[in-house]
Amino acid sequence: MVYLILSVLLQFAFVVHIVKTGRSTTWIWIVLMLPMAGILAYLFLEVLPDLGNTRQGRRASQKVKEALNPNKDINDASARYQQSDTVENSMNLANACLEKGLYEEAKQLFEKCLKGPLADDPNLMFGLAKAEFGLGNAADTQRILDELIEKNPEFKHQDAHLLYARSLDRLDKVSDAQHEYETLYSYYTGPDAAYYYAKFLSANNAGNKAQKIFSEIVSSAQSQSHHYRDLHKTIINQAKSELRH
Image (cartoon, rainbow, N blue to C red; front, side, top):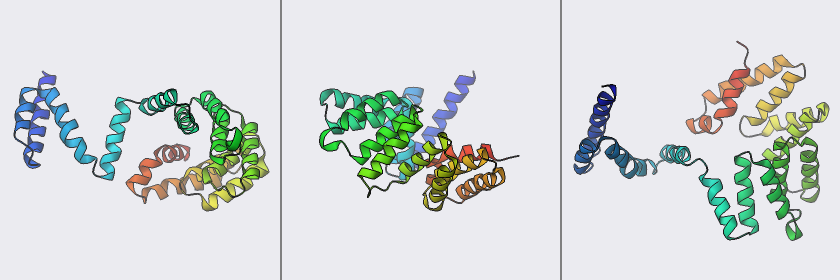
């Protein structure tokens, strides 16, 4: 009975949408004759393509695709790698592995690429450092990033800098980590550096200052765009959970 009521309500809502948006009346018959199949067909063939023309729509569409096929990116990258074992395909697969938390696989792929003329490539070295950090190898992360800057002094990347600070933090190099966090806090775009700096302060007997920074992250997010809040949703929520009640 409940299913029937919900089905009727959905049909009514979609019929109203079809009429208001000026779609072909054929869709009305499809939705009425084939309730669930018709509604899904209307969504995928009419509504989602229109949403794809806006930034919010593209983001919503991407979320739907990821929910339906969460492994698409890594599967596609793996297929391209199997077809052609190039540096570009290896790097793309390595980055896809990082996204999925497959750090050992990512490490092996980055190491394979870091040879010959690409032995000092900064993007590959940064990728390897991320894989090592994901594996819990903070000392190797620091070493790789030190070598990266030594061999590529012009390389500037805020996320590489943050990873360096976090590796120092994990190694309990308190003074060095604090210096890097303070520098990052002064220029980093986004809430990540502020969050990890606050976590560092909280763990090193500076809880009041940490609470102030957590509060800044949350209050700043409220005045930012929906895109900003969506992009940094995880960090913002973590900052909220750190605030004392």
